[in-house]
Image 1 (cartoon, rainbow, N blue to C red):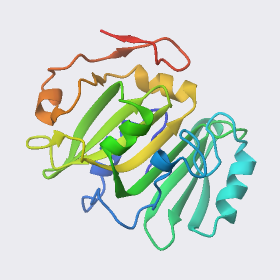
Image 2: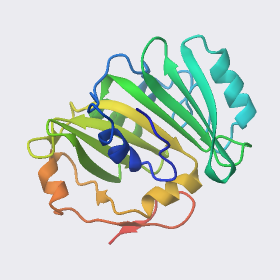
Image 3: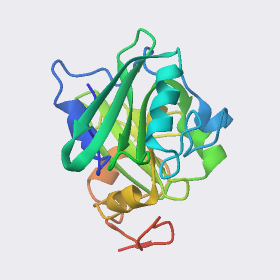
Image 4: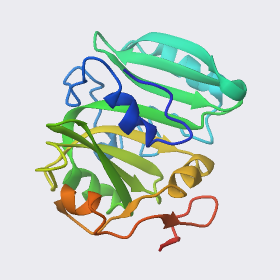
Length: 226
């Protein structure tokens, strides 16, 4: 299940956990896409030639509707005049969504991905994240959200539960969310753990890392944590 995750991408951590039965976070039927590391057809935060904060909403809708690999394209209205475009990848489950606040421009892109990339693949291309958070979805499934303000994007990463799981180079990437700067600012005003490298998830959740990203508006990549 996908629910609207704006303005806080962190809601996906809760949204997935509320599904019944509990979801399998690693799903080969989700979108088959490695553009995060190949840069084809465009580099993040661009996806499928759609760029948050730049691509017009009407143009983005046409691009999605005309892509034969994307199916079950559905448009719905959301609160305060926004719209959400959701779709599947082929015969797979609902994987992806575009969001606009005002019907004029794309503000955020979410993709749930087949597990074909690892954290180190992405870091090699985009550098290390600045912030992260994590939550259990089931006892043996944890979802990590890693924030890359300079891109800007969030990366969803799988781990086998908070108690025993680790953040390691081989952790699989299972989703990405691309922001325009205003949407990213909201994320950076939430309580996040500062990236301190690979290690045990239980150390992060126990508060051994600094929390709360205090950032300047519009991007926040130069902000300093408390």
